[in-house]
Amino acid sequence: MPALDYPPPLQRLIAQIKSLPGLGPRSAERLVLWLLQDGGRVEPLMDALSDLVARVHACDECGFFIEKGEDCSLCHNPKRQQKIICVVEQAADVLRLERSGAFHGLYHVLGGKLSPLDNITPEDLRIESLLERVKVLQAEEVILAVGSDVEGEATASYLNDLLRSAGLTVSRLAQGMPAGGGLDHVDELTLYQALQGRRSV
Amino acid sequence: MPALDYPPPLQRLIAQIKSLPGLGPRSAERLVLWLLQDGGRVEPLMDALSDLVARVHACDECGFFIEKGEDCSLCHNPKRQQKIICVVEQAADVLRLERSGAFHGLYHVLGGKLSPLDNITPEDLRIESLLERVKVLQAEEVILAVGSDVEGEATASYLNDLLRSAGLTVSRLAQGMPAGGGLDHVDELTLYQALQGRRSV
Image (cartoon, rainbow over all chains, first blue to last red; front, side, top):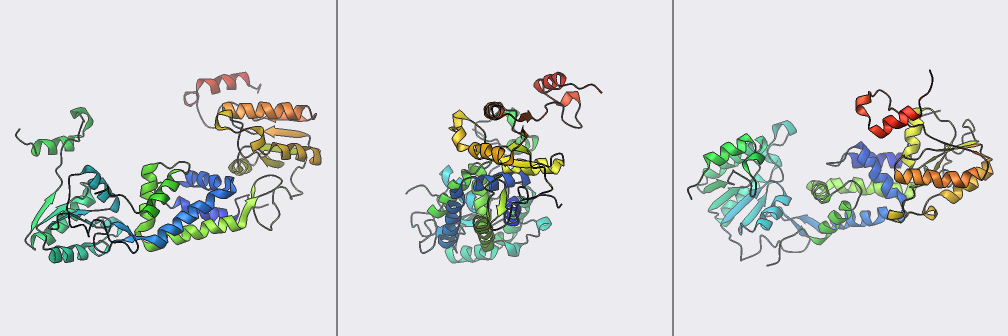
């Protein structure tokens, strides 16, 4: 007799959940079995998913998520500085920076970072619209708040070349010691950069 | 101004995904943002979920999953031994035992284990239908293939009391050394049980 397996619809859902970021085959199986355990666990999830598709999209300007039919509270807020744009990789980075309370200008979500190995080229990122916005807003400074990994550095360097020629200030986030940590908790490169970037007190 | 956050439909989905087993707030957020990144990632997931609800349910007899309208390939297979029932906690355990190739009888999925702390009492498990099946099938042996954690032991002990009075053989899985592992890879309790259960060769 053929080896026993789950019914095909269940196998398909496990395969699909397995392909989501952060989930492996075992956690996908456990999750799907949990969904099946009581009848009423799948419908609320489906409702929330369809609600998401129907009501949320990315703002054409900054790329952060907004409800359809509503104005972006970031782009259309006259209290925010209109001449300084902070470029981030992901929408989640906008929230992180907002929570820090240190920035009151406009954001621009790239939607990723340059990564030739993953086939992510400048055309895949929201770079065209960044250049457009810089022109329209007559921006004075662009802060490249991208990661300091290899892809982040490459992205920052690429954007710097493009933006410098437009004649505005381009800056990056400071690198150094994280808040509240001792020297025993940081790696050598971070320590090197913290030394290089030391400030007189 | 109020603190920036994701639009409500997005927040709701994150909250829902966060409540799934094995997912925390950070992985839920990352997962939902990933779903939003390209337009077409949510629909296939919704299709697979609705397919699951529409086409899969638990077999009334063994509790394993079957496609609606189809016979259970475990319960309605004359080649399987009909007088021996293996009791497991979850449907996934059926697959694990089948893959081992060591059992050719019938299964019975309890749907959990007794756990007073989680408010799981005998009424929440498929115990009534187990006793019914034991009678109908005139079973000769019931193997309690539940876990050896506290709740598993309690469940086995509870079922043993019920079944012994019905006058049939009740057995449990052997405990001892896992296959292919040395003494340095097992804990003391496992070693104790392996010694207690030693067999002459």
